[in-house]
Image 1 (tube, rainbow, N blue to C red):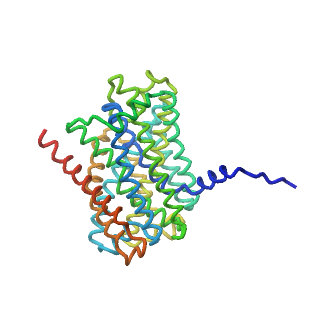
Image 2 (image 1 turned 90 degrees about the horizontal axis):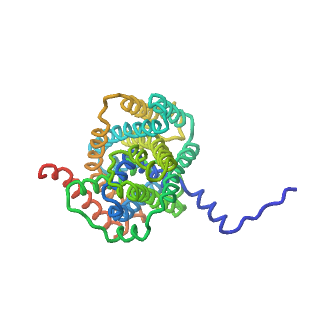
Image 3 (image 1 turned 135 degrees about the horizontal axis):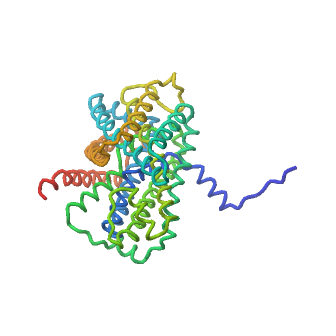
Amino acid sequence: MIKQIKLPAWLKRIFYFITLLGPGLITASAGNDAPGIATYSVAGSTYGYSFLWVILVIIVGIVLVQEMAARMGTVTGKGTADLIRERFGVKVTALAILALLLANLGTTVAEFAGVAAAGELFGISRYLTVPIAGLLFTMLILRGNYKNVEKVLLVLTLSAMSYLITLLIIKPDWAQIAHQAVSPKIPLDANYMILVLAVIGTTITPWGIFYLQASIADKGKPVEEYGETRLDVVVGSIWGNIISAVIIIVTAATLFKAGIVVTAAEEAAQALAPFAGEGSKILFAVGFLGASLLAVSVLPLSTTYAFCEAFGFERGLNHRFGEAPVFYVIFGGMILLGMVFALLPSIPLFDLMILSQTINAVLLPLILVLFLIIANDRNIMGKWVNSSLANILTILLIAVVVLATVAMFVTPLIT
């Protein structure tokens, strides 16, 4: 007879907590994608530790928005697009979905470009890495159910640990980091404000809202267990922003001090080697590759969920191809287009990334306003409507995003 091993209570709690992680952690980790890592690398190498205050502010915003999405998905069992269509009609929904499709296609191309760039850091041609990544994730989605897909995506979130290891190698001045994070010197120049908007835009995204709510609805946990779902979302959001802060710290502690400004994540990985060794370059590249692979799956899924919900098609990873053909065809189409454009030798990837971020910036206030109205509708949410504090904070967030978006368009005209 095998003797049963008794685990300490604290270890049991850790294992239980790990079992709760899912859509919240995946969504937040996918937010640290190729454009995101590039943005944080530019921020750290250009402005040093003084940019960390932005991350502290964003943590509040992302927790607020993602919690609302999780609550709405749990209570209604429906995705964001589904609720928008029911509450506001087809025309408003079609406008939002069209903008989302354009933004997500551009960002999906950027994710495949991230896979290509990360592979080339290891000496592997993009003409090998991009098709393999596209084929693997297409097969995963086509043949897997929600639980199996979630397990693979959760494993990919572990790639972010490489940034923490890089941080330990570099050994930055923590007293200086803490001081500049809470009392930053904020330069009043156009480039700084545009970068602040870019960080907001790459962290609080329309696709993240659509994906998180749809995946939670797809997971189908009862509302009585919402406390566990909320814990996943809050912890995931905080974890994702910790990794964002770590990337800023790593690039600030090395590149900013050396006066080196980078414009892409792969440039940051290459530039780290002379200051922190070849190992740090490899670790940074591993994190970059893992994040790009994660986002390559999540971005097309968020688009597919939104489109099918908006126009009444069957959707979800627990359905076979014959049960939800539109769902799988759109996913495959997004993957194929992303691969093809990323492999074109003359494609202006930087301009495409800026265009997709611009569409996201314009779309986000609209989604947040619709979101806020639904979250306060007792006919839809019952007793799970927003609190007064959540409403106030969301309105402030919308105002900040609108002002930042206006600044993004106006600044080039006056400088």
